[in-house]
Length: 292
View 1 (cartoon, helix red, strand yellow):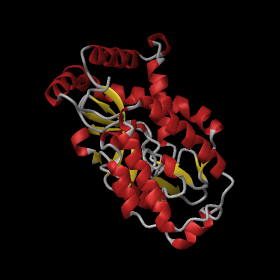
View 2 (view 1 turned 120 degrees about the vertical axis):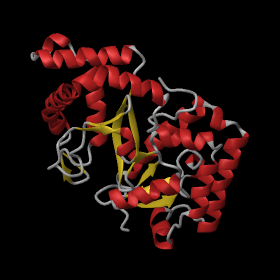
View 3 (view 1 turned 90 degrees about the horizontal axis):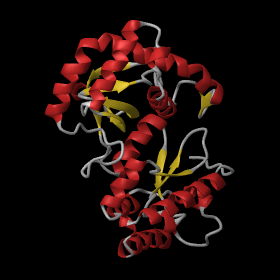
């Protein structure tokens, strides 16, 4: 459940006192068994996920696949049948987890900036940070990590400039302002260039979309104004536009103003249309190679 003051997948604990109490009551006594349960569930995912996507952006599974693993884990956990857990300790751990959530304990997938180095998908479980894809940067690490959320170093992405900094460090990516598709700039103000990948409109996370909608697209405007777009890259991507860089920036900024005036920051229909159009654009961009 998402509260009115919580963005989708925002790495933040709501009602800290309650979550601390429920964690201590239900989870702390079975902490080791719960970690083993999560390790078992994760191990059951590896073969099908590796077969589905043996590599991502040139890196072998599980590297770079924290989102895919986290989503699959959430589905696996939701479908657990106690009878399939052969060990009594695993059954007890799962039943304790059920009691925890039924009592109001929080179990929620989150995403953010991990220690200034990575984008990270993980879970908040009470007052714990649970990473079931802990080996997706360094495959020699244990696949599951559980520690107090306050010690995890996971924090929300603040704006698109923050996003661009982490993208550069983690993905070795360049984030450009979206001056190529101005009609989509309010929702998706970034074009991201990554090694071994085609250019893509970015910010396509529920969290980032909600963040800029909540700002009435002013965060998108900030990114469009502040981020540089080197002339040689603009020429490579906008060869058919016949428009100079300054005019293109003005168009994208004007699109933000117009979207705000039309109330698109309050419209789920506008959000849905923008996502569908951006997916089509990204599909068309798969054939484009840009050197950066």
